[in-house]
Amino acid sequence: MVDTHVHVFVRGLPLAPRRRYAPDYDATIDAYRAMMEVHGISHAVLVQPSFLGTDNSFMCSVLRDAPARLRGIAVVEPDIAEEGISALTADGVVGIRLNLDSLPLPDFGQGPWPELLDSVRRRGWHVEVHREARDLPRLLGPLVDADVDVVVDHFGRPDDDLAADDPGFRYLLTLGASRRVWVKLSAAYRNGSGGRGIGSAPKLAAMLLEQFGRDRLVWGSDWPHTRHESAVDIASTQRGFEAWVPDAADRAYIAGPSALELYRF
Image (cartoon, rainbow, N blue to C red; front, side):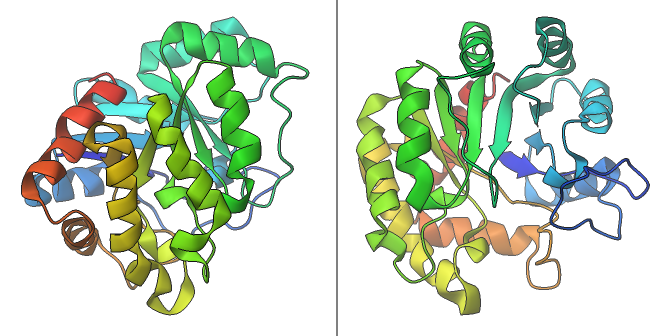
């Protein structure tokens, strides 16, 4: 089983100047590895947390210690030098994350973006997008047009109240035919307060499975579930996955071959 959304960090690391918050605890790879064995997780993808900004050094140090079982998704400046991308590749990074929550939307046709996207495409990396569904039409279309692979976080982040009726989520469904877009079935608890996100997740997952197919979906635990630590653990996220995708063969493919191929294990 491949977990495609894990954050690792320790207190005392340099924090990004612009951040929504910073945790006051450690989420170590040793703690996560112990859970991997218990919960049948064979491989994991480390995603650079937003509060560490573009300093990927801690994540990369963890990747270097387990190259067979770990991959990474980095956060970079759009004008990163080619040498920087090469160094990240050597450490096991296979994509970049655009965590655009509460940030201005980039213009992918201007400035350093075309060169960065070309480098991503040539290396076989992908772009991971974290943004509310309402803005996905302005983000995903240009990325698909740039011929890069795209991974959309957390069911596409539909509106709390609209859920499956969110026009942005409906737009996301139309991209299944492109075969350039994957969606993470993860962190349903971030898509609506009072349990609404968890409640809408089975319907969202069924619609995504119908339009994308199981080979364009992946699963992630979102460990250590920042800001939801007291209510969520890996066991509950696995139970959620079972509820979202009732067919065991589909779940095995989503958390197996689909993720293994996308993340180049």
